[in-house]
Amino acid sequence: MTRVVECFSLKEGKWTDIDISTEFDVYPCCAYHGEVYHRKNFEDSRLDSNKKGWNNLKNNSLKKILEKYSEVINEENWSSEDTCPTICLRFCGEKQEGQREFLPAGM
Image (cartoon, rainbow, N blue to C red; front, top):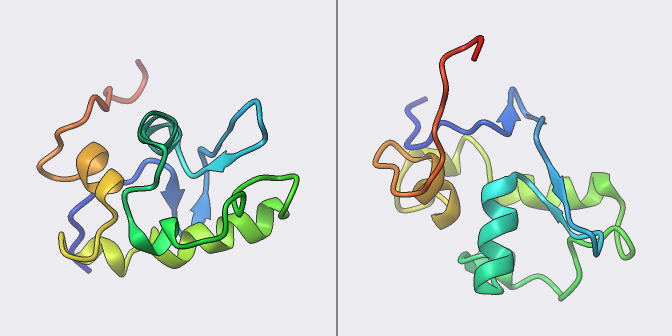
C-alpha cells in the first residue's frame, strides 16, 4: 500500500514512541504532543469530536486510548493526503513541512 507519511511511532500496528504529559494526557508521538499543546486541538475532526479528556490516563486505560488513536492514525488513512491526519502529514509526510528530521542509523 502506498503511504503519504513515514511514521516513526506506529510500526507494524504497534505504538513504539508514545508521549505522556505531566497531566497524564497520552499522545501517539512527540509531534502530536507539541501540536495539540500549542494549538489546543488535534487538527482532525475525527479526534477532536471525542469527549474532552478521552486521551487522559485518569479517564481511560492506555490500551483504550491507543485503540482510539489507531482508528484515525493508521495505514489506511495514510494512503491519501485527503484522509491522512493533518499533524501526521505535516511532520512525517512526503512533503514534510514540520521540524522532524530523520538521522541515519547509528547516529
